[in-house]
Length: 124
Image (cartoon, rainbow, N blue to C red; front, side, top):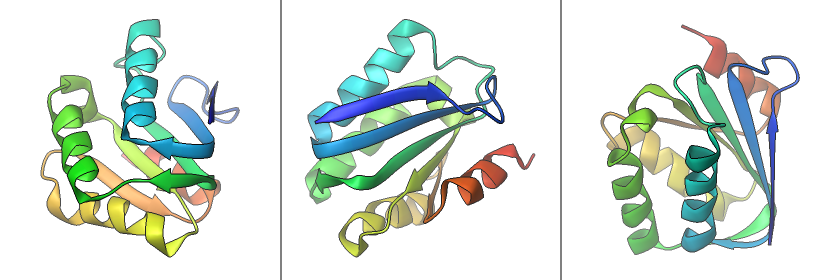
């Protein structure tokens, strides 16, 4: 498993990109959020994070999803950040769709293209 962290070249102060590859589970996702918070990369100036799952093997179940949502809700910064999830696999898209529909306070939305995610994040 590998995670690439970078600033969006079009909006370097506003959008972070996390690109996952290999096998990814709840532990890796939470550790990557902790890394971004600890490094200061995820700060109040960031409007959104693009989470690219398009080339990874996501190993997540409903219990993992609930735990991830709980984690995000316990960190105030996530209440003001848009979380775009880029995925193409029907098994992966169910989680951001559920997050979008059921998780009050969090702004989560699935996308099939990074450019569309970028546009959504930059909408005020």
